[in-house]
Length: 189
Ligand SMILES: Nc1ncnc2c1ncn2[C@@H]1O[C@H](COP(=O)(O)OP(=O)(O)O)[C@@H](O)[C@H]1O
Ligand SMILES: [Mg+2]
Image (tube, rainbow, N blue to C red):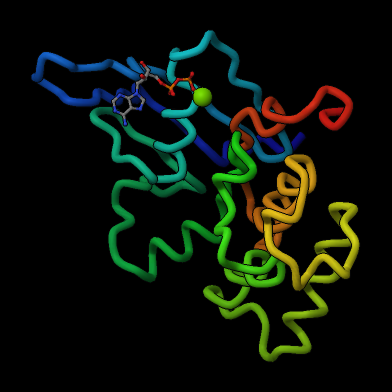
């Protein structure tokens, strides 16, 4: 295995509502590295801070203390649009609730191609459609689903749509937050 850490988490803390009566130490001093090619599992009881850790890694929440180094750069320094875009291209998340994580007003094609267009990875409609079909094939969904809406699909199918969206940019890192726990046991397999 390649020995470059792609993520280094050093003494990271996240305190919600700091200094108030409802203060929560959601993440309290965690340190670990994740290496290229590695599947890293984070295990803990409900409320132990797993989802918060994912959000901190994605920069959906700001850390209270410590450092997160992604591909050698401190993610706290990524503030302007260009740096944030470059960062987000390389780290994507698959969420726990497949319905809540997909915009109900967008077609499957629009959901999957959104990131491709934001990052200007497709030059025209033909390229966009071809890439969407390729991604649908990859996650085992029928191409005819492209023009339909999330509500027309089962939880398992929606989660595949979320996976297609997450892998569209070929990110260096994918965070799966209990990505299959909301699905039936037969679909989880
Ligand atoms: N936005 C928030 N505001 C206040 N407290 C939060 C927020 N998000 C999570 N928490 C609290 O942080 C702790 C860790 O939650 P979470 O990271 O969701 O745990 P897990 O994913 O391991 O179940 C919990 O006590 C939770 O209630
Ligand atoms: Mg969670």
